[in-house]
Length: 295
Image (tube, rainbow, N blue to C red; front, side, top):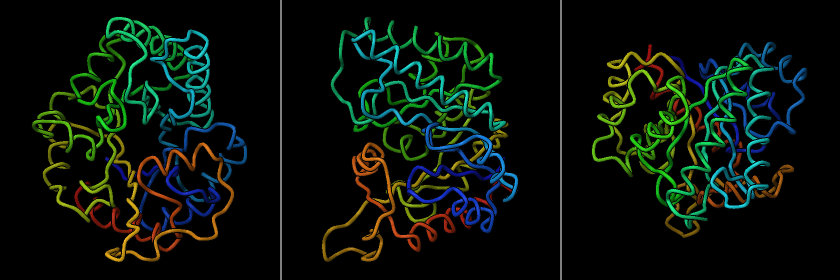
């Protein structure tokens, strides 16, 4: 196992992110799933300069991106988007694309269970075929019920993976597991060898170590099943807008440029643009919590 991180949680130059995570002992990054933001040659050079490898990317399934959409054209455009993320990861020598099939934040379905299952399976098969050609693995990720109606548990993600290919895997996230699973450790065991990626944030979605989750037991269960991939930091710190706030200086008041869709995505997660100091602290705390357990 090794420590990785996403970078979609704060809009900042990639070089700034890479310098920070190298300092704290991260070995890789899951690049934000927005291929238009990254020139492949420049990104490869930055990764090499800072000694960080690309582990993969997560699809930012926002706006009109939805493999479960009733509209065939919308599904086709969503497939094209996922393929573009797969291509980017391949060109950056990455291994994994974490696929969230339905629009994050959408909690009302477009069709019957049977219709949507057919749409999603067919679309994911097309994405998977492209991934195989590019030498990238697909890991289907369940989210909690407040972010998607489509599926929320490990068993459901495995059902989609099974419908696509024995070589399709799943990604699990400790924050979502804590909400949705009867037993999060059994969910990890259920995924077993099909677990291709694992995301971490504490039960309150702050950095690992700032909540109630039992990280020694979680990492121990990953070791038990022989998991040898990334443990990927994905905190989404909730903003407290009251006088009770423990972190009054966490919100960036002078934000850098950020696409409105990405800003909405962050805000829809109950967060906001975070100050560099607060963000840096969250990165450090995750590393201090997880690294001693995986080494």
